[in-house]
Structure formats: structure tokens, C-alpha cells
Image (tube, rainbow, N blue to C red; front, top):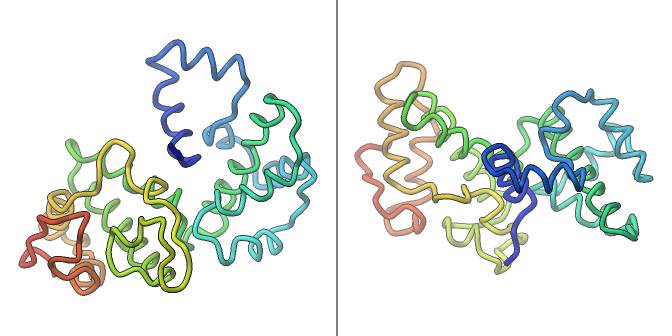
Length: 233
């Protein structure tokens, strides 16, 4: 099974508290997680990359990430070029991806990124029961990213976007990199999200709501078969 780095990171983050064994393994192996970068400044993250022989400034990193859809897409070849010789070195090499995704989030928040799209989906699930309006905001933002991913890849359906087959313009990474690992972004949740938006001024969603049906007409939203069209728009 090919598990994306962001999914593995999220699993470790969620389980290290309640699961003592997972927490002990993370501590014993000194494995960094995305949360490890939260207290580091931009300069410190750039220096951390430099400690692996990867010396970039902001402009150079921007050029490196310009055509990518995820930080993992950029980090994999960089990690492979480091020639890590031991498991400990490879574990510490996770910092390369962590630095990239953290800087991407800070420096280019408007640039679509599969890891950050996954964060929005997860944020929606966390708010689903207690704050439906907050859930709506998170998932409408996620759908906006999905539409931009479709523009970037030429995909015309959710299934095609997540397929390992090469779409019209470029290959899209596995859907496992952006779909919530526990449950899909199903149509019923989209309806809930859009319904909450309709009930709260300022959460109308604007173009996102109309574009969902325009981009994914009935029968094409393969990952969300229960979308009720009259609730969109």
C-alpha cells in the first residue's frame, strides 16, 4: 500500500497521545512531525533544509514548487538525492518534506497544495458536529481547491482526479493525498456544508457553489452520488 506522507503524519499525530506504543516509537526514533515545525521561524526552516545540503532562498523554492501540486512531489526527489545511509538519517530526512509543506503554507497560502487541501477536509470533519458554519467554510474552501486541481490536471471527475492514470495535461497525485483517510468527502456532507452556508450570511460560497454543479454535473460527481442539485447555487 502506498500511503502518502501527509496521511502517515496525521496518523502519527492523532495516535501518539492515546496510543502509548505509537508515542514511544516516535520518541525512540526521534521522528519529526509537521507539528515539530510550528515553533520554527521561516529562517529556521530554510536553515534546516540547508543542513541536508539543500540551499534555497524563497525565490528558488518558489520556482522549485511552481509546477507541483504537493510538497511531497517536490520533497521526494530532494530526499532521494541526499543519499541517506541509515534508518536514523532517513527518519530525520522527513524534515525536508516538513520544511517544504510548512513554508508552502506560510509563503504561498493561495497556491493549491494537496497537503493543505487535506487539512481543510480534516478541519471540516472536526467541526461537523459542533460548528456546521465552520464546517461549511472549511469544505467550501476545499472544493475551491478541488476545482483548481481539476483545472491544473485536466480532470473532469473526482475519480479521474484521484486516478493513477495520466490525465490530459499532467498526472495527479493519488487521491489518498488529499481525501480524508477515515472517510470520503461524500455528497451528503457537501449538501450539509452548502445548506449551512445558505443559512449564514457571509457563507454563501459564491462561485464555489455554482461551480460544483457546473464542473461536476449529475452523474459525474463519482465520489459524491447523492448531491441534490437544487441545493447548489
